[in-house]
Image (cartoon, rainbow, N blue to C red; front, side):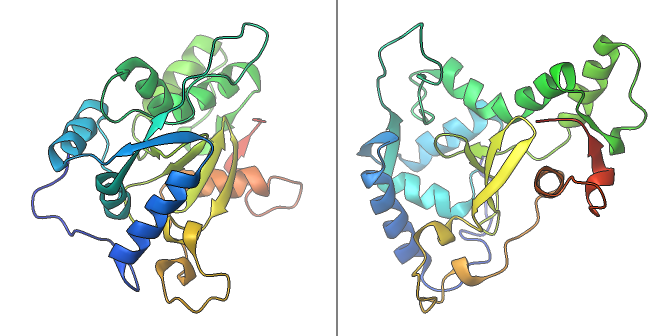
Length: 227
């Protein structure tokens, strides 16, 4: 839930209201979600409390301008990936939204089970799968919770968080920050997009491992296995 008195915006440069409007316009044009009127502060607080999240201040402001709701996709047993592509913060489908919130952790647990993934900071991997899963679940409960935007894209609770695209242990960063999603390609708008992205505990290291796990990589020692 939103903490009383916390800074309205994080380490933004430029005009955060302009960034919020531009992000809202980008959301309205996105094919991934349908747009509806924004949320009240009370609705946002309720969503944060329901899912034990804290939205980054810029995204919180965007959600007051526009709410990206899931598009209806007719069930098709022959296809995968036909479920909702964005969360419903109005809590009309809590179970499905919770699945999206928990997907980063659940995906890593799947990799522990099926792809021999193990994060070395967790200690030596137990020999029994059930014990490995128990340790992984305990350790992952301590990492920062991420807010789903749409699709596989997630952010932490600060405005300088990278935008992570997460599928199990396969991570990449499509945008350095939320602001970078609507940056001026000329680099002249002075927004947060042109600042160095912040570091999110665990997730930034997992991203480095995911992208640079090859032999001789300085990040290869962080883990084994995964996609």
